[in-house]
Image: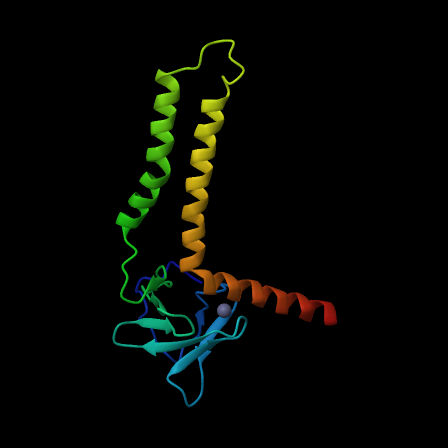
Amino acid sequence: MPRSKLFTKSFDPHGVYPCPVCRVGKISHIPLMEAMGCDFCHEIFTVNVEQQQIKMPSRQPPLIWRWNGFNWAEAQLEGVELGWGYGLAAASFILLPTTLIGIVAYYFPPTPGDIFTWFPYIWTILTFLSHLSIIIWIFIEVYQIPVAAYLRAMNRWRNRQMER
Ligand SMILES: [Zn+2]
């Protein structure tokens, strides 16, 4: 994709575009339908030309991508704005408990020589990891269809390679 173009190109439903789900295939117009399909992961997208958007209706709520002239902007759940506020909330959800426990461990150190001296540090690390995994789990839940579609497509591709 040449990115050095002087003018950004508006979205044309009869053009060919990279697939926003698998990022491997190309999506193009499906004849007789107001929709586009991917030649790799076979996802179907409905088209909204006025808003320069495509929508993946195979999950609820549908995922939406907006064409920004060069590429597909990050996926959004319909009716949900995944703005920086969510990133901030996720970061504080991970960092605040970890910091709190770290501060407690720092100001109330165990008696030296105690066999449990390592405990506050392990606890701090465990708090960090458990909160991090919750955020990763929520992220995968929200975007579960793209991840699943990507894995399915990779499997199909691998099977095709083996048949040759
Ligand atoms: Zn695809």
